[in-house]
Amino acid sequence: MRFTIACPHCGARGIARAMEKESDIAWMIDFQCDDVTCGHTYRTRLEMFPSELPVPKRGRRLTAQFEIEI
Image 1 (tube, one colour):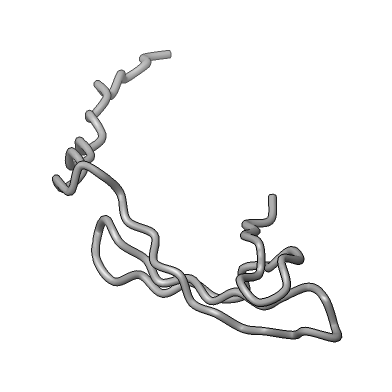
Image 2 (tube, rainbow, N blue to C red):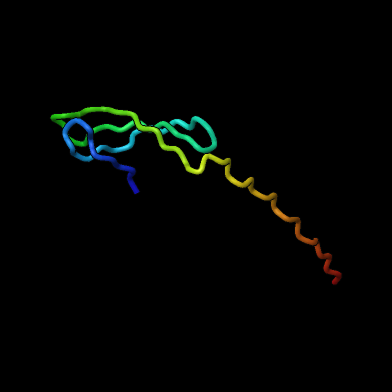
């Protein structure tokens, strides 16, 4: 899946080319216009709301080791 947003200059499709993580809930994304005659590049900010940090992931539970006697 491609991340796209309309070009603010000409309205054509803008394709995400690079992403920079600023924090656990915010990213800066660089776009480039898909229209070769325009070629406009622009930066957007993506931020999750509410601005609370995500719930931390739980560690993996250890499974019991079974010994098999033959």
